[in-house]
Length: 233
Image (cartoon, rainbow, N blue to C red):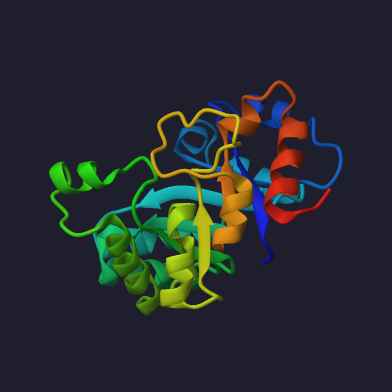
């Protein structure tokens, strides 16, 4: 996998997602199907996107007991997604079980773990989640556990991508939401930066939803994101 921009399909119906994608007449973008769209449209949407030639990041953030996650990953693997994820907070045994289920189900894509949501601040982590230590140290610890479990990488803030690479190696993927244009709004994200800065910090993939899907010209916004992140036209 080479570096790229992933568009988060922030839609509640299959029809809205497909209408959005129909505007992209050139190379098909890498897309993310999250909980809202998946719970509305179901697994058939992922199959259809793959059949149409899209690369798909299935972002369901599994977090349950190891046996449940293992069985669920075996089912999701059959959808052919290029990337799937789970919560690193579930622990080493859960991540190992997820990988076992994913591979036993025929999954050939990348399996990655969410460290801390980009909406989580240091204060929230300490006062609400009761997790001590610096936020970056917690992210790095979760990333190390994901690597020990055999996963391909993590979801983290672009602000932590450089440290994750230093700790876990250049081949360990960093998939980073929390990316906004310099002249845009941050919304409910806390740990954010621009596409250009995310590239400089070592992000392999940036995930952008509302700055693209909510733009007046989504195709132009996507092309701008790719140009700033990858330095391409």
